[in-house]
Image (cartoon, rainbow, N blue to C red; front, side, top):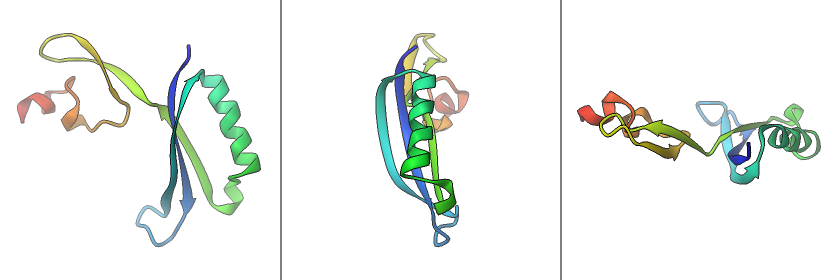
Length: 94
C-alpha cells in the first residue's frame, strides 16, 4: 500500500538538549514501506553515514483516527499532540 512519508534527518550536536538538531524535513509521496526503507538505507550509506553523526527517522505523514464525538473517521498528521487529536478525551475536555 502506497502512502506519504515524512523523513527527518538529524545531525549530532551537543549544543542542543536532545544531543541532535533537525537538519531536514521532507515529505515523500506515493511510496510503500519497503521502498522508503531502501531509499533511506541508500541515503545512510552515501550521504548521511551514522559514523559522522547523522540519524534518519521516517514515519507516515498522516494517520486515520475516529472522532470521539461523531464517530467519523478523519486523517490528521502523524505527530499531532494528543491534546489536538479529536479521538482523545483530552481534546474534548478542554
